[in-house]
Image 1 (cartoon, rainbow, N blue to C red):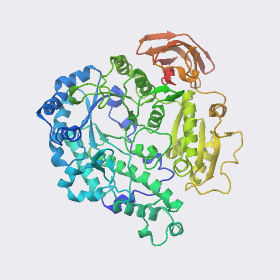
Image 2 (cartoon, one colour; image 1 turned 120 degrees about the horizontal axis):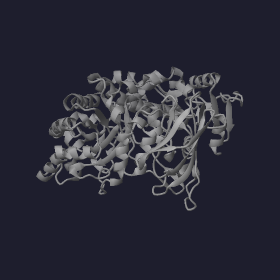
Image 3 (tube, rainbow, N blue to C red; image 1 turned 90 degrees about the vertical axis):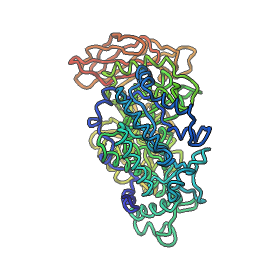
Length: 635
């Protein structure tokens, strides 16, 4: 049984990030082999039938005979065969939403019955196991004491789920609530036999309820010295409450760190429980995609270390108003955290992005509630037939896409204390540098504090908007430089410690220009990063834009559907000593086409005659090995 003391033990201060080896994410080589072998092409319908009736009517929790019949047809062998014929190999279905076992027990039994049908047809099954909310109008009838599980605002009110005021967010760290959620996980693993377990709405952290306050005080006790605690609030530690706007700065910063760690620990606890039941079950959550900066209680760098996948339910990818709008940033974070990204892929461009950036997952290609196949939940638009060639290509060319490795010249640090504690301009500085690198096609990864011990895989570490670094992090960076790594410092760096207390002098300013390229914040960062990389990147793509196309040349390839680009020059830096025996072009739009190439030293040059939405340039070594796939269309 979980207790408050055992939960508090897991909430030690991790403002500088846990070690990478502490991650619960299954190593790629120990995951079920079907993931890499087949990849994931998902179809979804995860609303339990009584929940549909509660949300959409006509009678709360009481589906009509017509709804019941359509629900059975939705999971019928005929429907499963139809999905499979479209290329779907993974179904995300319902398990439990939060209305109580008396209300949802029958639909949970249905999920076990339906899952057997999917498996018999050769599909894998994921289940929706928790919404993060209680449907209190039913749940409190079954468990009246669950009123103590609710997260409260500063004025003591529960937090509703948007306009659905019959749903309240519950404290994921409350010991009784944890036990309830663990029972659902056990059912999903043992009765349904789920391949993956989904936890939704991971966006609301601790609040002003009694449980949150007790855990926060335990966090403070284990994080700060007596002297630091004495300066936080007048009176005893046991009187400290979650902070308000006028609370001392260190209390507010401690609360932000605690909130992120508490939310992450609740997810990690469920992951550990699921793995205790079956060691290879996959675990996944929905915290949303990676935004412009870290906003507590959301810290993807901590959350994603608990599982193998996460959702980005943001809008469509496009090039609008002179700016690229895409999920590339989310995919990059997913790859660094060894997580698949689940997203709705409703256009060819949205399928091109995950083939270029995601880990063995094409995304959720349709929603099929009541047997109607539409592009996403609650949409009236049918799934486009134009997606079928991309789905077929994803399956047919697994030899190119399977567990493809990332080649990254540079790493951009998302520093938690810099983004959470400092002024918003610092988080924006990091975001703007990431955006410039994406739009310029620079091969890079996004890293978090936890990754500073693994910098040797990058030629350059980019510090942009990173004023707050701990002594330990500074030592890690200095060790990286001493071993041959280089820095690109854009704006102030290491001017404060991990709690955003100012240092006497910036801690990295003594590094010479031979190892640290410096530039002012706000300038175009790409030239400085290129200089730090020795004057060039591992991949370069150049194209001439059509006269009527406003897209910048570096962005143009593949970012505007319906526009073809011609004579695209590509340069790829090969591993030392390798020769390019052949270069070919693979695409959903045509059979493989050979390309002429020439090699100078370890750099191979070739030209792509035409690109529509998606192409892969396949460089084959003379000993029949391949460079990790290069996907110029959406760089």
